[in-house]
Length: 342
Image 1 (tube, helix red, strand yellow):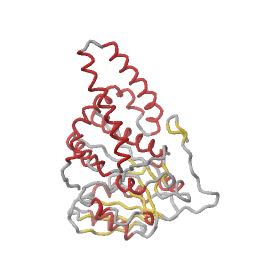
Image 2 (tube, rainbow, N blue to C red):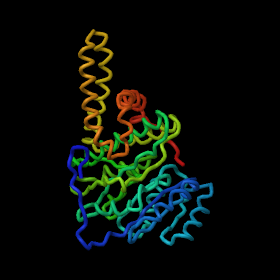
Image 3 (cartoon, helix red, strand yellow):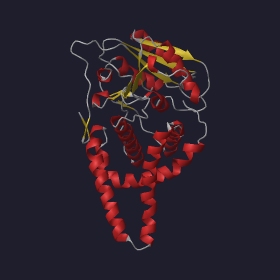
Image 4 (cartoon, rainbow, N blue to C red):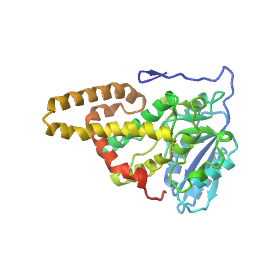
């Protein structure tokens, strides 16, 4: 397989190998409608042995009734109740991990839909000897409008970063919409070390667990899980500020590399008006043309693999918008406030 122009070594189980049993965990809060719509696609996975374990996190809607109805129809579904009202997914996820029947844990969200009945099979293909962590991809669903285009672009760009770092031997994050790991490999007290943060149950787990030799990636389109994009700018910025606030807990070397990338990006656009004021518009035009050419060269092949091919025509506007996005959200990285979920 090739990721853009970069070759990706795929791993397949030996002929006749039995795929490992899996525990798929979903933490849900007041998600009755989503669970009713999307859980059946998880339960219909073409996989020899798996359980779906839903942790109901103090829901006050009809989540319990929905889960009871689905469990009566699907013996592979179990659900637990977590009445601890504290925000975030760490508490219900800890409960789910403890109660899971199998060592291999697969995470997804209540609003996620597998792209195919073979989602779990594609993840399991990467569960070769020595593997302890599988990074998957969760694209946002396509809708009309610039907000949707920008949210999807940011999702694709984030995936390019964490997949590329993983391929380079420096895995640093993943997304809880599509992630698998061995329970036996988890560091003791992992979540308690950052219990004051609302998020971090996915990317900080990966940052602590991932190593060059134990991480695999799943890039087949059939291995994706899609979810709705935020419908308002406020919802989008709340979600992203919560996630970005966890990056200060990454390993120092990962913070350094990511900061260098962000500074180079911000620096380019910050210098453009200064160069124009100095009358250097030919230099600005040449630099911008070179930047867009390189960006298109990289983004064009990769976007096709990550369900973002339609965004290529928006790239100049999306790239510029990303500058203001980073400026607006950068304070959240260091001074993010606690937020609620569900």
